[in-house]
Image (cartoon, rainbow, N blue to C red):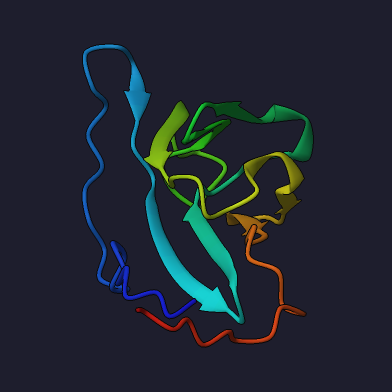
Length: 123
């Protein structure tokens, strides 16, 4: 799978604004690792117990509690991100890793790597 999703986070500091619902949309990067999708969400101050990942049909919904900045004095907030990823990824087998500044997800592809290419003849 050759993904050209780009990146929503280019490394420049941005002011994050909470929506009316009280949630903040985190900045994230998407890349491919073979046929799998790798996501990295920038959520400073997040603890593993504060992250939930929910599969809703073709959508992956990630919520986390953290801080708006890397300092302990930064205000606390709730992050929310909904991504429509479709049916070519096995969302139910998503692996999640949380570190001090990011939530990293590896979403495996539903495409089998062992299937050989087949030439179809059209009559």
